[in-house]
Amino acid sequence: KPPRLKDEAWQAWALTVLANSYSLSGQPRRAVPLFEMHNAFRNKAGDKQNLAIGLGNLASMAQIYIGALSDAERNLRRRIDLCREIEEEFREAIGHQELGRVLSYRGAWGEAEQELDSAIAIQQKIENVQTEGISHAYRALRFLLMAREEAMFDTRKSNDESRISNNEYRASAIQSAQRALELADEQAKDYPVPRDYIRAHWLLGAAYRANNELDKAEENLSKA
Image (cartoon, rainbow, N blue to C red; front, side, top):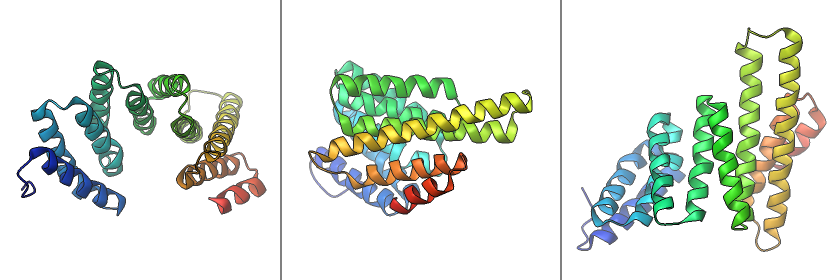
């Protein structure tokens, strides 16, 4: 049932705050119907900005964590379309960023790269260092997943070809995670965002671990 408030805008607000609380406390499945109710209110009101935000929250804070990747992809694509329509570049970039993450989990490597490149291009244009760092972290994640798939499943290549690809993916993962860490430092000149440091050190540690640089892996994972 919707909240017992007279104004539907406040009903929608209460729903999304409760959904955020479920998601952040590790209960994303309970967040899904609340985000969906929020989005229905925003859609009914023709509130494209808050609908775009709600679609992104539903996808990136709930659906991605319960494995509903097709639904997450659809909602993020709609978010991007809405943001273009209302010329909201900051939130469009986040839509591309999160879509790149979803596509990476699906193994759609080429599309994921395009979405992350689109996010970074907008973030550099609007000079948003903090979100650009997240996009580079997602690039590191993509390269790590590519390396894992190469090692486990690709039987079409020779061992030498597979080893070369793996080396390239691991090196690119390290480079992307290092860039994410650099941007976290740059953002910290205004105000630090601890979770960006955690993400960057975790991915850098994972990339060094995959590259068998165990001392550097331990150092970064310990920092994370």
